[in-house]
Image (cartoon, rainbow, N blue to C red):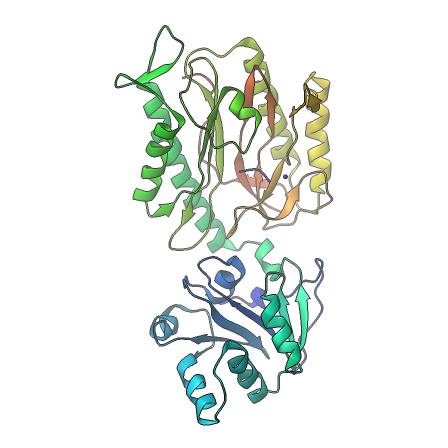
Length: 398
């Protein structure tokens, strides 16, 4: 989907606007307060899914999680933390002192016990809690993403997790293709399955149930057709016609590891027009530029501009046509991991690719009256080039 991370030493690295601020002082700590179920930074830090907010902090290279009685035993087995502290123990300490036991009071006690006076928190940290900490005398520094610089570079285990999610995305795509192959083309120009018009919703059911059966979660799977494709984030709805473009964009997330896959293919049930065939071949050529150019040290902006130049040279212009953006008007790629969109980007902005980055390569072309084409694979950047993690063929007509 286009864009408009076991304890590891790398997790100790920080970045501020992409640069490390250096070693933390003895009175300084990293702090996150959130639910890892919905916060990828917390999932990366703590290493396990928790549906309710909890405390993670790192002080003097020691990682702590503070857990409720409900989660503490699971945390002792699963959390990537050096110490698991009891929330209820700290609540009792405060009550014995005749003090309230709200989140701010627990944090105040935790940090005063350890001589912590300065905190570094992520950009999505609660503004209310930040104000409360400052009112208690703590320095609170907001750090923009990437909060953990190491998240940008994937190790072998992370690459394996992403590859597994790509495998599941491919299974979902194959289920959708099998359903398309079973359809009949009738005189009204629509596709029929078991006597009923095939819809985007029906195709998504085939794809999504296949993904869920593998233990992955599909979210907002895109299966759009015809002019719907010209709005690249259109999830697709209604009956599907024969002889028109159908874009599949599938991005399942593992319920075990949290890592995403991301896969796009464009097909036609029936016969593609000559113009659509030309667009498809041009998008393939654009993607090949990405495969040929992606390597350690290259600027993603340079790759994006080369693909745009190819499209323009072949007569496929980008811009506002008849009041609608048409052509190639999204990025070439984005980082992939615990979020569907992560740094770095391959887009009109400067971003240096480094060994270990995992990025999508997904150029596209979209025109009203013709349809749209998007092809997306995922590669890991290496010192000499890149390695495609996607094992899925490309074909237009079925």
